Length: 233
Image (cartoon, rainbow, N blue to C red):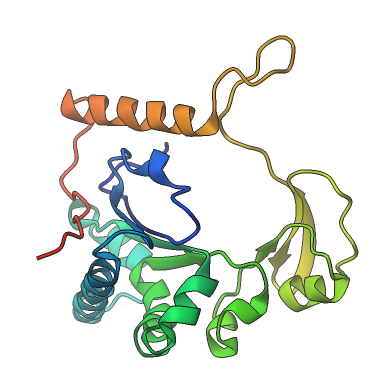
C-alpha cells in the first residue's frame, strides 16, 4: 500500500492450498505459482532461473557502481533506482520434500547471496525441520506463533522465550538474538456493530488490488518497472 511497483516486485509460491489468490490482482505481483497446477514444476524452474539471472545482473551493476547493496545504489542513482524483490514461499516443507536437490542447488545459493542485491526471501513452515539446517541458519529474522513444544520456541527465536498464551496473533519475533513478544492483527477484514464479519480478508485484499490497478491505469502514479510474469513456454 505504501510502495509503487517501481519500488517493489513480489513473486509467490503458494504450496499451502491457494491461500494467496486474493493477491494476484496487486500490480506489484508478477506471479503466483500453485503446487496443484499442471505446469507447476516448469514455472518454478523458470522463476528460479529469472532470480538467478537478476542476481547476476545486479551483482555486476553494484560492483561497477562501487555500491555495497541495492539501497546504497538507489540512493546514489535515484533516477535509475531498481525495485526491491520479495520472494515468498508458503509451506516450505512441501517444496523440500519433493524437490530436495532443487532447494539445495538453487534456492539455498540464491538466499545466501541475494539480500544485499535487494532480493529477499520469506518462507513459512510448521517446524524448523521443514527446511535444511544450513538454509534455516540463513534466516536471521524469525517469527513464530504458539508452538505445542516450548523447546521449539527456543530453537526458533532463542533463549528467553516462554510459553505463549492462547491468544490469536500472539507470537515471538527474534530481534538480534533475543525473543520479543508481539501481537499481530489482520490489516483488513471489517466487522459490523454486532461483531460479525462484514467482509472477508480475501475480498478486502482483492478490492485493494483493484483500486491500485485503477490508479495506475488512470495515470495517477507514474511507474516504469512492471514485474515480469512467469509463464510457460
